[in-house]
Amino acid sequence: MKQTLAAILATSVHGIVIHAPAGSNFDFGSSKCPCVGIAGLEGTIEVKLNKTTTADFPADFGARCEAWDNKRNSLYCMPGQKPGADNGWCKEPYCYVDPCNCDLDIPPTKSGSYTPGASYQGKGLWYSYATCGGKDYWMEAETKKKQQEDNGVCAKKIDEKKWGKKSCRCVGYEDAPGNLNVTMGKKDFEYPAEAGASCESWDAKRHPDCMGDKPADWCKQAWCYVDPCECDLEVPPKTSSYLPSGLVNGKPVYFSYATCGASDSYSATNKEACVAQNSENNCTKLDKCAWNGTACLGKDIVQACSAKSSAGAIKASFALALSLLAASFAA
Image 1 (cartoon, rainbow, N blue to C red):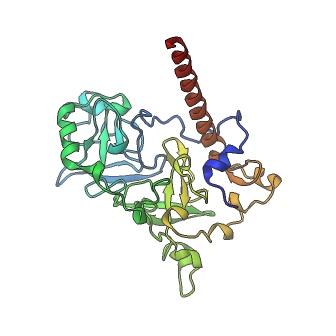
Image 2 (cartoon, rainbow, N blue to C red):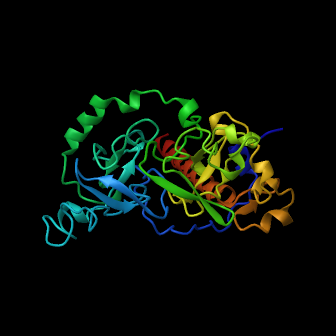
Image 3 (cartoon, rainbow, N blue to C red):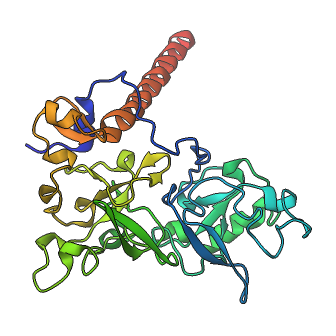
């Protein structure tokens, strides 16, 4: 009988050390308004500062808190310019956020430049200085609220066929500019920078096994990248070997065919996939995997996500105890 991820986590052993991924010292914003996108990517992307000027920013631009413009924006944020390096808005950290998952006094702002056309889950790109503890020099809070209300972004229905099931949404930026290299074995292959941001058959005519006259069956299957701790499906997401340094809100990026309504025949061909390990001994030989008592899953699902579930349960129990105590005094 199949179990949902929540049921699987319930069988996990609690109290173990949470796996800390490389790059976990990044700041991903307030828990009330977390940064979105995939951080930790290597390389650069070209952003548009205006109609005629571009600049090279890190490939994970916007996916974590950083003063992205400082000493990169060649129009305003270099030494000797105004406001200049380490001054004014140039030094303020910000990141892209989901406007429908941002509960701060200062709402996010819709981005109209830098990466025009790029979008997160079909909502466009919205940025926030506030979630990163930065000062927003650009727009008053009330104006931001009106902008979001007028846009109606949170009233729009999200297409699950494109952005994944509600319980396991795709992450990443659709129509992000440029390309990125994904790791397969000891080789890198070029994929579009938006790969994995929505449900598509990203491997078709790109993966070496998907070339030629007889591509593998899984080449035509749609998949996307997901947050392993925000994915509650009968078929858990899998660890990604394509982006070994990629992080989603501080956790290694995972991928899922199931959220796109597709079957995963790819993992069965991957001997190093966690789900392919049928014993605890084989499972624990792989650093990325962990045994939950009944199955081999990604270490982050078994450890970090189960710890998150436990913390939530403890918090809820504590809140219930306080309410009962208050009721007894009132009586």
